[in-house]
Image 1: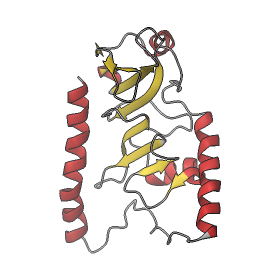
Image 2: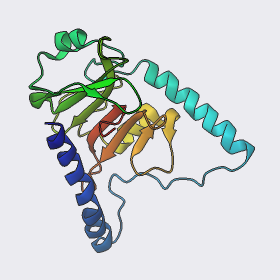
Image 3: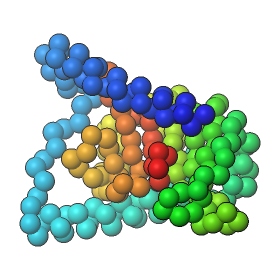
Length: 197
């Protein structure tokens, strides 16, 4: 099932380039639902201060974040109580960086959750969440599959890491929104550890 989810996300990513060429190359302008152009990144001391401010804002946003009620650090039992039994459960994998990971998937919610434990006997807790269309799950701020870029911006602008292809709140393990090119709406939400690691 993990392969299915990765393949699903990969198809979306690989198809984006062609859709971008078709939509932007053939149209007179690409303004429908488009984000405003990114302002140039500040340099020097201002860049460091801006980045510190953004990271602090992102940390404050993510501290209270949940997707479909699922929060980082929840136990497997907590997640089952919230979402029900998963459709598929992977095997515990020893990670090269130490610890163990385990992936669960809910087909009816198009949602995968990555659990992590410090060792083979340690309790496993949520360290990653992946939601793809047509999942009904939303973030704590009401953003979900089908939300517009403007809705994402209204909810998460303070923590937005500019200059990235997707809309990232925080850093590499932050909250990431990817968008369709044809409608400019959210088609996937990733939060926490990378499922590919």
